Structures are given as C-alpha cells and as structure tokens.
Image 1 (cartoon, rainbow, N blue to C red):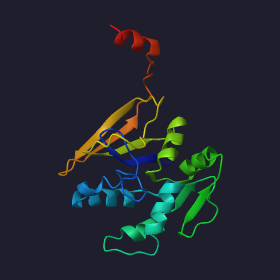
Image 2 (cartoon, helix red, strand yellow; image 1 turned 90 degrees about the vertical axis):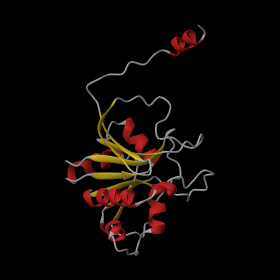
Image 3 (tube, helix red, strand yellow; image 1 turned 120 degrees about the horizontal axis):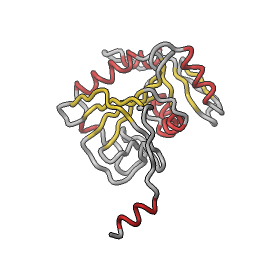
Length: 206
C-alpha cells in the first residue's frame, strides 16, 4: 500500500499561498530568496522517490502550464511528464499533460483505491484545499514542511480553524538559506482535548 505524503512550502506564520509568484497574490514568490542547490537536490530526490502525484486542480494547472514537453539536464521535467498524475477536481474535464487522470467527486473512494494500487509514495505537492480534505479524512501519512524564514502576515494558511492534530516529528533538515525541512507523521496514539472557548475568555479577563 502506498503512503500519501504531503510536501509544502510554508512560511513561519503558516502561509502556503503562491510560493512561486504565479497566482497574483501581493506577497507571492516568497520562496525565491531561498532557492539554492540544497533546495533543488532535495526536491529532485523527493520527486524521483515517489510513484505518483496527487494534485488539486489549481496546482495541477500551474504545473501543466510550465512543465509538459520541456527538458532539462537534471531530468526533472521528464520525470514530471512520466509520473502518473491524479487530479482531484469537480470542474476539470480535459487535460493535455500526458499520464493525467482526473478524479471526480466524491474523490475519497478513488483516493483510497490509489493507496491500494500504488506501492510507492503518492506525493501531494501544494494543493492546499486537497490537503485539507485529506486531513479531514485522516488520509495523510507524512507531512514534509519546507519552512521558509519569512513572515507574510496575510495569505491562505495550510491549517484552518478547527484543525486539531497531534503530529510526531521524525526528522529535521536545515538548509544554509534558513529553510528547515520538518517531517512529521500523524500521532494517532493521543487524543487532543479541546479547551472550551469560555475558558479562554475567563482566563484573559484575569
């Protein structure tokens, strides 16, 4: 059975919106200052180690606009073309990128089937809303958070209100640019008890 592995560029304040600067977000492109050989080598190894990509529509279309038919000395573009790509979308009907399959609603049964069929890691790149859907159904086996040394103060965040999870750190890897790769797996051995909101109110009034 394959593992579902989420890999995310993320800021210190939890923002994951527009790391590459293509989504017209005012603070977009915040990863560029941290790009170096360490960074590229990590992403290269990650891509070649996985067996398939699972993507949301927006991320898929962003990658599809830049990747198909390109070649590079590292083989990264060719690897992206060759990998099976599964796109979760209720609106996408036609695709031109090779090895693409569109998963239509209700999604979860198809995703569970992918886990059974694919023996290597199923890599989820970006795709914030898809990640939140997977979290809701407790389908994520590993989180790889590339934490960038920047605070944006605005933008869509990976974890939304009500997302309560207990994670276990399995590794940390700092880059010379200040980026730290934090790898977590779900800790399902512990139940987190929510503190009632009125407790916060009474505590703050003291």
